[in-house]
Amino acid sequence: MADTSANGVSFAPAPAHRTGLVTADGRPLRSALARSSRRARRRAFFLVLPLLLFVLITFVVPIGQMLQRSVKNEGFSANMPQLSAWFHDNPRGTEPDDAAWAALAADLTAAAQARTIGVVGTRINYDMPGTRSLFTSAGRQARGGIEPPYREAILEMDARWGNPRLWSVMREAASPYTANFYLAAVDRTRDDQGDIVSAPAQQQIYGKLFLRTFWLSLAITATTFLLGFPVAHLLATLPMRQSNLLMILVLLPFWTSLLVRTTAWIVLLQQQGVVNDVLVWLGVIGNNQRLQMIFNQTGTIIAMTHILLPFMILPLYSVMRTINPSYVRAARSLGATSWTAFRRIYFPQTLPGLGAGALLVFILAVGYYITPALVGGSSGQLISNMIAMHMTQTLNWSMAAALAALLLGGVLILYWVYDRLVGIDNLKLG
Image 1: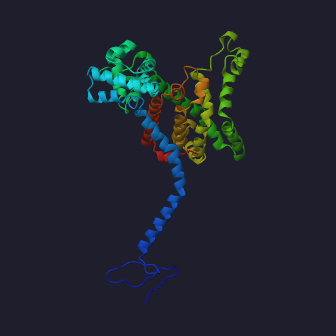
Image 2 (image 1 turned 90 degrees about the vertical axis):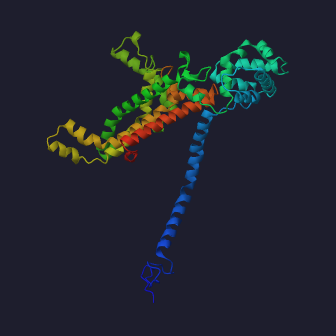
Image 3 (image 1 turned 60 degrees about the vertical axis):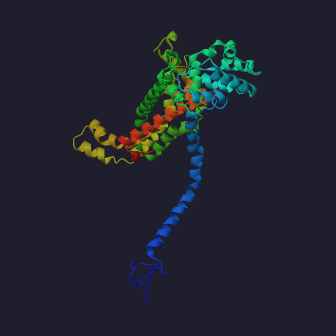
């Protein structure tokens, strides 16, 4: 007869070929526990499924589309199929023959009649500025058809059609997939032979913008640390009543419109603004020596430091609240100076919060758009402003996607370096 315990587990004698505990209904206990564990995992999965779908739809899919658009542009290949086929069948270095000119004439006529010649010209204009008008002008003339001989007829429209550089660019655009946008994003291009070379000096702008973006982001991160560390320490050591009041002042920027905060700094920092007026009144500077603190890098650093300062203070505060003050007192009692106790005892314990705050501020700074656009002027613009310009003005979404992908790659590299040096498990976000 089986012996059943209070929790329902039966210790019935097992057959010779079977050993182990069983449940009250005779099922093996191990399989019952495994089945229960699977049910728990399924319930947990269905609970997080809405959030998973939300992240997938709003985050993963858009990033995937951005990465695809950075290497894919069918503006030329889809609307110039015959010329694209000729480029595919003939290797680089082949001079355009009669078949190539005939394919160009047929595609120009078809694109003009389909009213897609502007799309074709825009695609070529991305790699060779000034050529969009060439295509649109040829499209107007080719709408009724082009009579042979095609080469002479097309060159009669415009002699630029014989430019080898134009044919090299059209060959690159004949494939819907290209890395040329990434090359342009790092100030590189392809010559007539297809070799990667440096872009002309007047077109080398993106490398400088990337360097400026990372430099200003580092400066903003360092400034927020210098200003935020004492505030976080004060928050962590004050009595709760005073600490809560000070915390309200720290969080106040979150409750104020970003546009209002940015325009307020314009009022304060302009040459006829409050700061310059006070300096003139104190006699620090003369009335004709007013400082230019806005519409440049100085204005960008000041305004963005004010906006991002809470993102440094809160992680630091969350870590400092947990540091036992007896550690520093013990170091002082053993003969350490205040600086030594801070440097060797207190500060190392704040590193998880410092790392989290620095990572947060830096990542937010490299992608900031509104504040540099309003207070940065020509010297305080970041790469995010160039991305926005390509999306809203030039409509070169492939270039914008390539720049954004490089920016994303830089942030991921930073994240990896932080994980290797500090460990992502040590992040304390507050």
